[in-house]
Image (cartoon, rainbow, N blue to C red; front, side, top):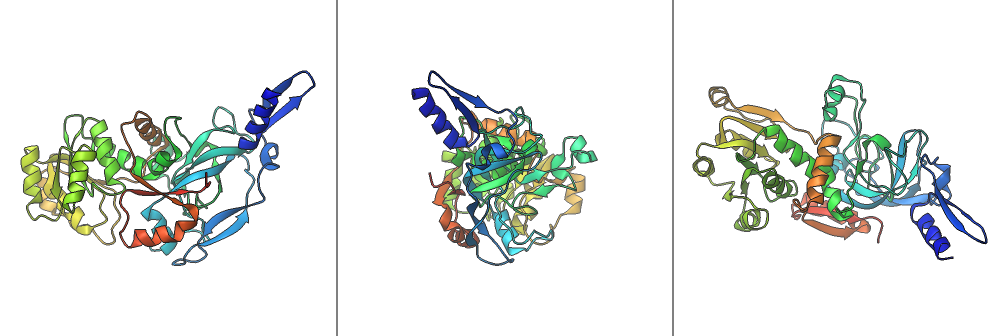
Length: 390
């Protein structure tokens, strides 16, 4: 009966295991193409979710129905969910792109697949898989951007926690083809921030086209995105310079994150310091700070022929010295999150222990307080919610 007990425990955990018991033996039969009904009777009818009914509202923490996965979908039991500044913009409704309402935000959900819909191959996703639900909820797969490996630019994409409901909930639906497999070596707490902050900075560094041994300057290096960018840069063989405000943050960048040097971002002579330290400026400059001033300073930090990549989204227009950009052959480009391949690579860096997210874990019930802290600038590193309560 020892095997029978193990089968029951496994069934209760992932809600998808069918088992047959005789007086002489016990066997566990797992479906490789589980219909949602195979797991539905193990799932609750309702779940707790953080719902924004109107822009600017505080979250209403309430019970909502648990949905059944349709064709091509999986249902994920959320264990942890990261909290991002994008979620604040979604709730406040202050970006040009409209959100759905009512809305369950959250696009850094990590958990376990508990049910799969029809037409989901077990080679793509299966019950029991450890997965993450990222910002890129889905893409069309047929446009020029999708076909050329730039699905993050798909004009028909849906975004988790923005155009579709997200991960501030105990269960979340997602397209099976777009969930990310989380390596066993990466905890759910560590995985959650990689699903947005991690892949965003990793993809942004790739967009600078800086090669191993060359210089990368990260503006906003001690923040939620920046502290990951510094680590990715170092892991990719780049010589990383960090810019931020305050001696404690600069020390954090060099002593903990591995930056080669760190400079006060508000210092009027910061461009001169970077130029001297790099013997001509950085090959790549990554703008993460949501500040027009930070973006304006980027040209002065950049080497001739270098690339500035814009990731942060401050309100307003970016002032550029056109003469400097043209004469010095500087490239300026934007970078939005990343592709599924980028995300898999970013998670692999974490699995190798080369990137460590500095997270502050809180109970799910503190969601409103976490948003208050984000708005007031009290957060260092990344907030992660313990949704499952385990």
